[in-house]
Length: 194
Image (cartoon, rainbow, N blue to C red; front, top):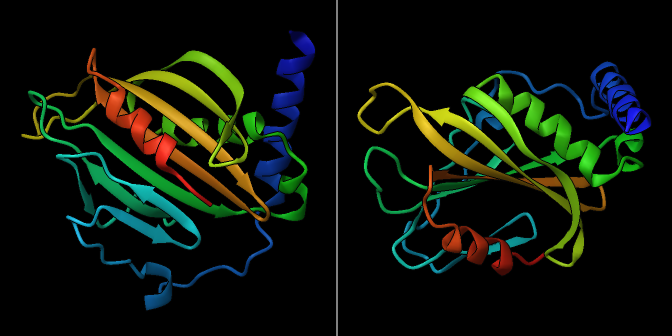
């Protein structure tokens, strides 16, 4: 166990120091460009990834104010003060990052998101899985998210998925109201094609 933790810590430190091989994006329009989505489309394909929305859900333009890696988002019907959501991110990997295991990259993603959520805790260590026919990993987290009406945050269940596709690392963050059904999230993940 010590070696696993030490290996992940070493990878996290090296990724934090390595930065990206991509040129830095300035504040120009290309850095803030958003893809407009048809909210009622059954499927959407962005940069080679095809996703199918569950019945009753809709596609929305990803909020890139939180992360410029956000590619698409979909939301489900409100369940009390919360609304289930799935956000898909894409990050181009450096040569060093391409050699990393999916679970290590997913841990980095989770640590980045930990800063944006209250009461964030790991509910399950990352496990290897195949997603969209590619090597990947998944993990479960518990957190608190802001309510639709802006009132105090309430508990939510989160599931993070990471998929390596050549030079791209796709991450999926699924948020479901605490105790909510995960069937729709499962259908989104099962529908993904690269």
